[in-house]
Length: 212
Ligand SMILES: Cc1cc2nc3c(=O)[nH]c(=O)nc-3n(C[C@H](O)[C@H](O)[C@H](O)COP(=O)(O)O)c2cc1C
Image (cartoon, rainbow, N blue to C red):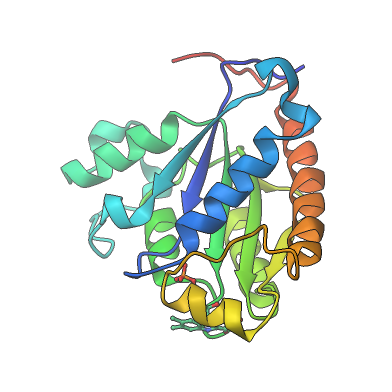
């Protein structure tokens, strides 16, 4: 059993205004919280991390993050604050849109600031887009391996059910996951989220999870 003190950060990887990413992140969290994996409140705590709210400048540290051994060595206060935030979590779920066959710059920037804070931690990628964002998913997974994270073998690619939903997503409008004509698509998405999350939990089992 995974300790209740385990914390999983759910990273909202779009900073556009408006955007659909917070809705997708909520869909992921609600799917996980409604599964038997979370029965009796025995699972880890899921917390949202919104990169728009963090509003990090473009990477501006003078030293290599992989050479930093204590976060007080970072030059900038925003880096120290971001380091403290990432240190709080034992694993991460990246909820990420596909932009032009890749992932948004805001998430690469947020990753590049740090190194040891990511290293060794399990990660799961949930991409979304007109075709599920497979290219962005694969590219981000590769980068996560570069900072020595441990991605789940199962990824999640959520495809907007039709063009109408894509148009709403672009405008940040309510995409109503329970619309009966589209529910099959989201139901498959829920199954994939549950399967990948189950793997993430297995990775956390046996890790030295403590409350900080
Ligand atoms: C710059 C940009 C590039 C995009 N490229 C793709 C793409 O390659 N594939 C795709 O399926 N959707 C693409 N889209 C559509 C997005 O899936 C859609 O806009 C979605 O709402 C983006 O997520 P967000 O609103 O959370 O930023 C792109 C959107 C933007 C803004």
